[in-house]
Amino acid sequence: ILCDDLGYGDLGCYGHPHIATPHLDALAKSGMRLSACYSAAPVCSPSRVGLLTGRSPNRAGVYDWIPAAESGPRPDAREKVHMRDQETTLADRLKAAGYQTAMAGKWHCNSRFNQPAQPQPGDFGFDHWMATQNNASPSHRNPRNFVRNGQELGELEGFSCQLVVDEAIGWLDSVDPKQPFFLFLPFHEPHEPVASPESLVAQYRDVAVGEDQAQYFANVANLDDAVGRMIDALDKRNCRENTLVIFTSDNGPETLKRYVRANRSYGSPGPLRGMKLHTTDAGFRVPGIVSWPKRIASNQQIGVPVSALDWMPTLCRLAGADPPDRELDGVDITPLLDGEKLSRRKPLVWAYYNALNQRRVAMRSGHYKVLARIDGMERRQNLTPKGHAKLLQAKLVDFEIFDVHSDLGEATNLADSLPQAAELKQELRREYEALLNDSPTW
View 1 (cartoon, one colour):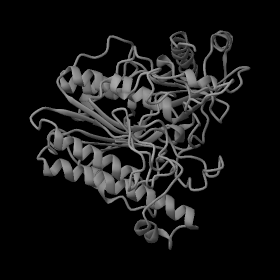
View 2 (cartoon, one colour; view 1 turned 45 degrees about the vertical axis):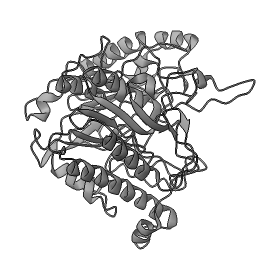
View 3 (tube, rainbow, N blue to C red; view 1 turned 60 degrees about the vertical axis):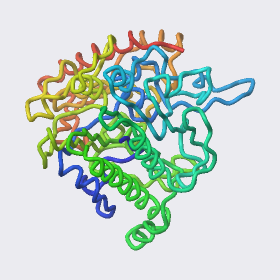
View 4 (cartoon, rainbow, N blue to C red; view 1 turned 90 degrees about the vertical axis):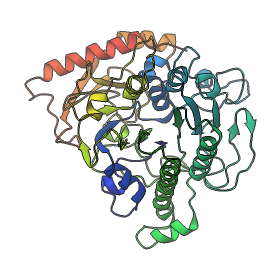
């Protein structure tokens, strides 16, 4: 279950002072609450591509959010960007291993949604899909832009996260209960344009500062209720005990009023520095809950870094599926699920060229977060051959190093005082160079 723009501090079990999330809090108690869970990018499209492929989105060629394609003499250059058909997804691998597969929610891995010019969810291993290109429109309430298996559905009655769960439950009722299944539920909530049930909004008006904040609080509460309904459906089908449930977010919270329609963006980064679109931790350090009653011990708080990139190798191992014959950037975290020590073969690295902060390259290595500025590089939304050549000549400069295990707010820069600072800087240079050399252009 993947939320959209849900902040690190937006759930009760992550310390939000007002939003009630009893279902997610219970889910966390039934298994693991991850305090160092990272998405693949600080923005939606590359984050989703990374999660689905187990590869850095840069390696997969998706560098920023993908706008819907529009006709005209000068279309946005990003409209050609999409998850390429040579990429292999979780659904592909699990389907090959005998799993029934479905998705319902926000796709956002192409610009030409539901058009033959670019691959669609069904081309990436999903037997059944109900999706939108990007956000629910005109809002979460009564959306009219969902497509099911290629057929436009028109206006639907209800709220997006609940409609997504309705679809998932209906699909479960239609498939063989003796075969394993893989469900991908990328909610639209709490991304703008936010709309929430009045019954929930009314519960938050006394603690919120204005109607817009009450709407946001209720939006998170509504997605919590949708998760509860999904878990109840698993219980009723007697498959909850042996179903691995993963809950997380695609990136950090949106900045209030950053753009015209972001008037209800009251997401919280908690103690973290920055927001969505930043390479500081609040951009991509997100809630992470993992539950599997038959295998994972309950009431665990895990501070070991876990990435969305890890789910491809992990689920392939758990399902007995062959992993993709491609460079993966995640690791198999099965040992962590079984209460054993996790060892990473390489650090987590992000290069988000359109970041709002100046240091657009970042790395998590052990307890340390390393950030660097690309000398002489302006913000860019896509990688062209010309831009790639320029980046190959640029140097990483102005390093920052933080012990984010203890300094969650990235307040104390250790770049000039940490004994191993030189080694960490060199590690980032080496890992970034390898990523850049394997980054396709458009």
